[in-house]
Image (cartoon, rainbow, N blue to C red; front, side):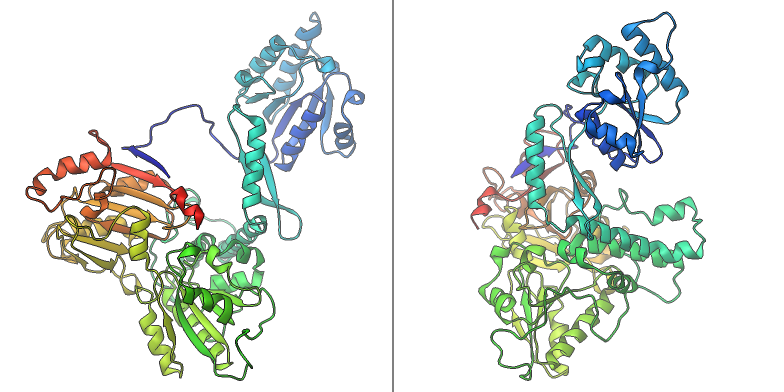
Length: 615
């Protein structure tokens, strides 16, 4: 588990600014004609760059691949010896002069890759330095093989994934060790690739298609001429820290631009929550169905088909009465499934209707002969998606199927199990509710926080940060001996903090019942609890908004733990909060907890404790 206690991240240097260049219509100049030059040329061609090979000795001296690509018209070969240069210069000086003339007369050269420097592949550092300075004089970045100090950029050990139809996918990964271990970079890259789903490349292709469909309507209506600010609103990359940002519910009067903005947010939801394997299998019709967000009473075609729908191994015939199980899947880690939930998923289910928050690691346990369908509970569409899932469950149960309605955590802890029980009962089915490990209890434990602790927290209360249809809720007031657990509120963090801390009669304090929370009250935001990419942001109510903004993209689902229990078990522990004179030392207590020195405002912890690997 990695931890840091800082006010803001401190740059340490020694890294590279890892960028992905778009090279369409630009020229990559490769100096040399050996096998490494061919490799650099291929990488540039794959990035849609034009490639010019500049080498001495003529084309016949080039490697077979360079000769072949030249014959195919993929690259342009230029004989360095034949370029005009200074009439009085000879040898290296003439080559340097001709390179200067070439760069002056040739527009569009954006990168230079120096793989060889002189005839016979004999490397000369003095010549390489001259080439480097000529290129830099034209403001062209240079990569010089095996000479790190003459490199403005380096090549990562990269891998491009295969797409859905066997073509190359837009998905690429690259690993760099910044010159400290090129061979090791290749090994690490292979390890990363082997751990990623093989369908990852196809999934990226499908998400790209869905993004295009999401913007298609407004682009057609405006004849492909959007204002710059409108185009920005349809691009979420790098601007939105969470896909759960609240949006208004759908309405019949929304414009084409508003509709496309909503659809783009739904694409972000699908990208964040749905299994990679499901994304990779989506057809265009299924994409359209997702983006339509219709409240159709019929079962949606958006179903993950692993194979034919067959009866459970425990069923005798499909004419038997169907049944519905409301099942809790726990906080996310597959080892936290109850035996009952595991049985329901692996032995009983004919159809699984899953909430979007259930992780792929849990869905992967379901046999391939079982249909899996994931709820479309996107911002602005939650009510319609809820109705659709309940209707689908009833329809399947009437056909004699065992339906598992799979929810994260425990079904009755903000899982809307109550309304589903009443709906199913009204339609002739008495569901079996299978409890799950609630994230309200499990997530704090994974973060090292006890919701109750003798001497610190005598009770705890669980509430939601967002009400029905996105409305604000009234939060409980401050009690020193109580821990507050807030689910589903991180996307509205500033509003939640204001409601908790502003005094009555001063702005929004009316959305709280009871005393205001002191600004130095500890808080922890726990994201992706129990999963390998779990993150815990520990701070105070005063600084937590800045802390969340400082860590980059949010990792939903997230929750908040507020109160003195947050620091109770940190380090050597602090379990005398409720002792005599406790409040008078709170400022020192918080300072000691966060960093042990003045100035630190938050701490970020990444990942699970390695001990969880045994499960």
